[in-house]
Structure formats: structure tokens, C-alpha cells
Length: 440
Ligand code: SAH
Ligand code: SF4
Ligand code: F3S
Image (cartoon, rainbow, N blue to C red):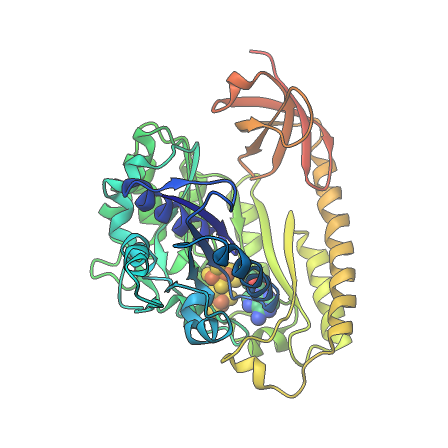
């Protein structure tokens, strides 16, 4: 039996997909690159904005013909849409056989078996389940070894930002015990992983719900003692929770990379308050100053949203001024998208779509200029690059990431994949750098 899996959305979904792949492999399922030779199609979905949701519904439309073309073909929907709108999916796409929520996807194999036996549809969306312990089980040992791996450390989110669907589809915060994460990282390293990225909607909330109350700085120190592990990253950090302890551990522990993803969302206090973000622009600037003062060479990236309900031209311009002041290394930029069941959806001061998109263009232009200026400022310096493999484009070129998480493309032989190189940055681009390995 063969499966074809597509992952939408964030790194958390990628981590979940890797567990599903391992469980399917352990049960004898083979991955298939083409739909034609697949018996099971899995769409691991995202609900954070309307666009990725629409993509999934149009994909489901295409899959109707695929399913009708041969007997026994199965369609499974997992992830955040599956959690949030199982009933709607089945109503709009009755060809769907399996719907598994964000804490039930670990049942992919048994659900497929039940569907093959004639049950239709199989729907599991209990948020009280927990797939995490399986991540360090025997199944993962069969997964393809990767140089870099995502490790979820805290599931869900309890912040309830007023625009965001994540808390309702991912459930409340639930931290994994330190020993379980440690075991998973050791497993990964024993199979060749050299860099881990610890994942959570807010990794700085890690441990608050555990009885022994470990925190992220403690976990980082603990994991840093793993022999054979070269680099540790973590994402995402809520600006409200940046602490002196975090800065201390980041500056003192050489395995922790100098990069923090610190979503600002908006640059006007009125908007931050209405978003329920729990910090002011001043708080944010203080966190940035402390990070830059305490962690040498740290890169700061962010998420920014434009067009939140009630955002005036004045608010938007104030935000641009603040971003100009912070000078982020890079930003993911989004136009606000109303999400069912969130507080902001029911507001009657929605910003017209056209205005949102126009502001988005202005924001992107500003950020592109800043990213390029910052990158140009690093030309001539050297960076430690973990070489991941051949570059997407260009004969004889390799690609890797600097400790700052910047993409670096350099000439070199394929056998260098998996090694740490010292690279002089020779050319700056929006996407990263071209560089040359430094001899010796
Ligand atoms: N937990 C992370 C964010 C996860 S969602 C954090 O708190 O930063 C990733 C990004 O999607 C968010 O940072 C936000 O910028 C964006 N986003 C979330 N809900 C959105 C919505 N309704 N419309 C547009 N963008 C949204
Ligand atoms: Fe959404 Fe806010 Fe939670 Fe991030 S912190 S996932 S933006 S509710
Ligand atoms: Fe999307 Fe769910 Fe991630 S909504 S952004 S896949 S947590």
C-alpha cells in the first residue's frame, strides 16, 4: 500500500507529518510521489488564514475524480482544519474517508484500516489525546534520518489573541516532560541529526503546566549536553515572555544559535491591546534591546499582520515607523484574515480587503529594503554554515544555514553535505547570501 502526503501550514504540521510518515512506514506503507500510484492521500491542513483553507477545498474537488478512478482509494484530512471543521469538511466533501484532529493524527494507520473495512467516515478529534510519547517510540527509528529536525516541546496555545484560530484548533498548552524531549533528541542524534529546532506556539511558555515547572532556559541547558548535537534552535517566542534567563542561556551556551523569532504583529499600542497580545511597543523595544545587548550578533525575525479590524492609516504608519526602528532581519507578513469563532471576526470595523493588500505591499517594500540593507552590511564577514545539500538552483552549488538562520549558497562538492564550514559571505541578496568557504 502506498500513501501520498501533503503538508500545509507551519513547522508544527511538518513535525506531525513526520510522525505520521514514521507510523505509516512502521505499518508497511510506502510513500508515493505520484497520486496515481497512491492508495491513500493525506492532506495535513492549516486553518490560520482563509487562503490555505480554500486550497484544501479545491484540492478535495480534484481528488473526487482520483478517488472514483479506482476502488479502495482513501482520502484522509488531518491537522488544524480537520480539528476545527470536521463536520463542514464531510458535508462539503463526502468523498473524505478519514478526519483526524491535531491530537489524533497518530491513529492514521488504524483509521485507514477501519475505512478500508468499510467504515465511513472515520472521525477522531479528541483534544485530550496526546501523540507526543510516540515521537520517541520505535516507529520514529524507521523514519528517514535528517540533518535537521523539528521537535515539538509544547502543544497548543492558551493565549487567545483575538484574531487567531490556533488555540481552538490546537487545544490548550501542554508541555512534554523534559526526559521525553531529551530521549527524542538523543534518538535523533544517534541517527545522524545534528540540529534540532524546538517547536511551540510559544516555547517561552514551556513547563508552566508541568508539576516540576522546568522552563525553556532549563530545557535548553539540559539538551545542550547531548553529545553529537551541534546546534539548537527554538521557535516561536512570545515577546511578553522574553527573560534575562533566556538571554543568559543563549549567550552562554555555544550550541544555541543566535536567532530569535519574535512576532510583533503590529506596531501600535491600540492594535496590540485589541489583539490581546499582552505587551506594548515599549515592552517590545526593551526585549529587542536586551536581546541585542546580551546575545552578540543575534538575528531577530518577526511576523507582522496588516489590516486588523480598526487599523487606521495613522496606526499603520506608526507601525511602519516602529519596524524601521527595530530593523528586523526578516519578517513574515500577512493580511488579516477573519477566522470563524475568533473575537476579531465579529467586529464591524473590518478594513476593506483592497486597503489591506495595499498596506501589505507597502510593508513588504519596507521590509525588503531593510533585509537587503542588513544583509549587505554582513558582506565580507565569515559565518558558520551547516551545509544541508545541493542548492535548489545552480550546478555545483551547496546550500546551508548560518547560525543566524540565513540561507547561504556556496560552491562545493556534494560530499560536504552535513558538515559545518566557515564561509566568507561575498554577495548579499534578499533571500540570503552567496559565499566562499574559507580555507583551513
Ligand atoms: N504562535 C505564533 C503564531 C502562529 S500563527 C505567535 O504567537 O507568534 C503564525 C502567524 O500567522 C502569526 O504570527 C500571525 O502573524 C499570523 N496570523 C494568525 N492569525 C491570523 C489571521 N487571522 N489573519 C492573518 N494572519 C494571521
Ligand atoms: Fe495564535 Fe496568539 Fe497563540 Fe500565537 S500566541 S498561536 S498568535 S493565539
Ligand atoms: Fe496553521 Fe495550525 Fe500551524 S492553523 S499555522 S498548521 S498551528
